[in-house]
Image (cartoon, rainbow, N blue to C red):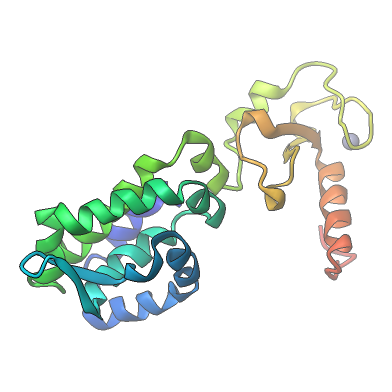
Length: 214
Ligand SMILES: [Zn+2]
């Protein structure tokens, strides 16, 4: 998630190159979406002297792209594919700082973090607030207080929610169907109604529910 990139970076800034390469393999699931957005030149460096993309796969360009992409949802990335492609292509072709990060002392901490952060920030500028709130699934607790009023009716059971402590925040349009996590898509349900609602949705997905599970 975007807000945690700094935490992530500080957690991993002292990783050895071996650790970093292990981390990279965790991001392989992101490759498909990167190919969709960036096309076949996705992981190739650009040579200024030759004025062309290099034939060979570049591991440094690779990590600078795979790590940031893994922080955004597939939907958000696809929605802004053209903008993202343009921004990243511009960096690969024209950004001297980026060129140093992918070509010189490529496994140094500052190069790894530098190139990843540059691509991450480029993607971030293409995203709208809606995309970013859509990335997270948990509502901030302040939304509950903002929504609640005396006599608020639970839309699951149709009864009033008598105390704010009995309420939980629910996605009106389910998160799994692309509903965003902000106040425009939030409603309050009784705690037990919210649980029942999500159990019912899970049953529809053929998930097994443990009866005793609270
Ligand atoms: Zn209810």
